[in-house]
Length: 307
Ligand code: 3PG
Image 1 (cartoon, helix red, strand yellow):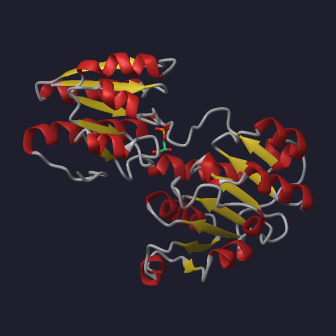
Image 2 (spheres, rainbow, N blue to C red; image 1 turned 120 degrees about the vertical axis):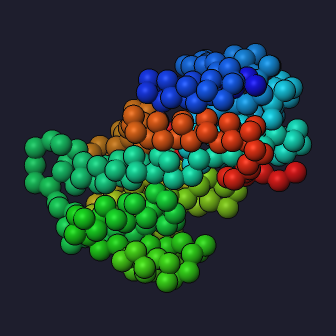
Image 3 (cartoon, rainbow, N blue to C red; image 1 turned 180 degrees about the horizontal axis):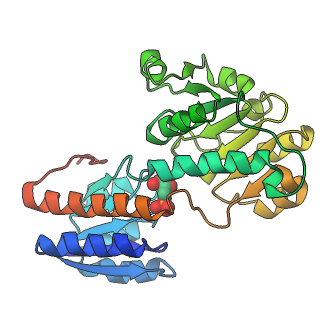
């Protein structure tokens, strides 16, 4: 079988070598399309691929239509809003992700961003410590739980909200359960977002929630740009000159945020949550193994679509 690894943001060399070795050991050929410019290059490259590994690369209906031999696509990572599941299901292509494999990298970045913001973006001046502060974790999945664990290491109080979990599941980790989203925001010095971008969550973080945060509150986004209502967030940051926003995914209105809010705002130059050698290896090799296993035994663990 032909496995294509299409990554606009390439994997670290160790992951590239590992994916190649796993695929070839199982008798497949593995090719790489890295740092490509636009969909046209991907459309051309997938024409003869039986399997596809991507990161945040967009697997659109156009890509699926061009991939006549495609049987499986694995998103090496957690969020799969870049996959057109409807088109993949219609074409009977199995779609998977690799949940948990890059979570630690994202969680570490979230804590790093918190320290960075509490120390005036590493410029001179008096900062604040994390110890004794409360972090509210919105969505307590693989990343959210790790953020909670790391925050506890800093001596923070951890509060979580996740409508898909039972209170006991959250409490078993040492975190406290917020009664509602409003409760989470009103009690938390930091809010760390770990929700996926879905029809339900897109644009859901805005004025009503953020304005409830206590003085000097800081919103941390290592999830997705789309979950933020940028207009409303700008409004609340204008009204409350103590609030802060730090994000690993540049807002559409990045220049406006930067100009209006100075050191109260920071956006990483390029999404780097999962950009560690370890996370690349974990997610990339898991993707290669899932594909080889699928071809060898029909294993569909982690399948995201139904058809
Ligand atoms: C994910 O959903 O796994 C993360 O956002 C990482 O995305 P990336 O592979 O594009 O860095």
